[in-house]
Length: 363
Ligand SMILES: Nc1ncnc2c1ncn2[C@@H]1O[C@H](COP(=O)(O)OP(=O)(O)OP(=O)(O)O)[C@@H](O)[C@H]1O
View 1: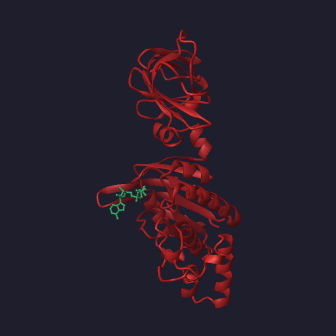
View 2: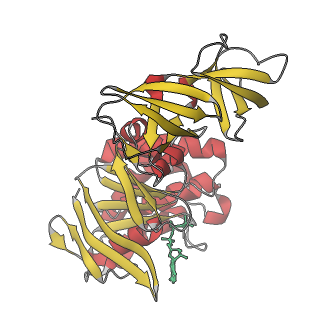
View 3: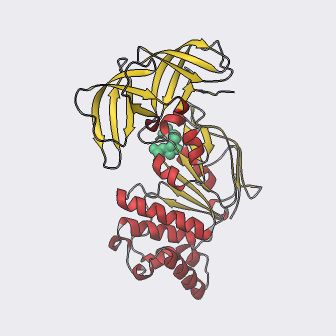
């Protein structure tokens, strides 16, 4: 187990800056997930922690010691790759034992360490098989086993489940959570899949464009995003966004107009900056409902585009007259009849963003 500090780390390839001034503290034993869209720099950051990529700007400290120039093999970290990276001509046992064999550990120690990892990963019966005789999930378990036997201070996972089908991914996610609980080792995990990140992370680090947009607990980020990117990236279906004009500002409320081209909405809000004239509302599907009473001022007229019935929940996709898409989560059966409908927002669930995408918070 080790804690990790990333201090003012930047990285460029030629003229292209891929990471800008990254600062992050990872506590010993924490499960941290770097998540973000393709190309945001998350793998580069992980590879810099592993030592596979140089870190010329800033400091990476492992248990307080700067490791920027420490050889990857000497950092006490073990990496698990998406591609498994197993030796095809070696058995599962030999693959898992490889680093110990290279370090000339006694045979009995190797057998004991590989046996222990195999038991944790339920691989005991597969140890004599070669990678070609294993399923994707089994191969990934061998790759994880190979990391476990090295008893690293930090595990680094680079999209390890991306090659697996959906069912197996869900199963392996549960296994990784159990593995972390059992070993208690610091784990850093990279994925572009926000659901995977939400389910695994103690701390989720949302990245975009080479910078950390926000980090915190998964639910903390879901409920209280700092900006429109984080708000839109986390959650499925995505948060809805609706543009509006600020009509009036009072001490404890604001009145918004032009929602969906027409409607008005009053929101509780303290100390709103009167210079702001335009905002964007962020509303999750659970804070919108199909409305019965069309006379109220805060009701938005919409048109049903299509309906997804998933059994336990129904998502009604509606379009506002402005063309903005609004997805309503409903436990009720399908919206029947005319596609014309009315929707109502729950003011307590509405977040506000400025035109620059930054969150506007009530004081
Ligand atoms: N060796 C390299 N030379 C030049 N550019 C690179 C190199 N490696 C990565 N990049 C660029 O750096 C950026 C960040 O890459 P990185 O692999 O860290 O992204 P990522 O967030 O992990 O994306 P993905 O999920 O697609 O793997 C990308 O724009 C990529 O094209």
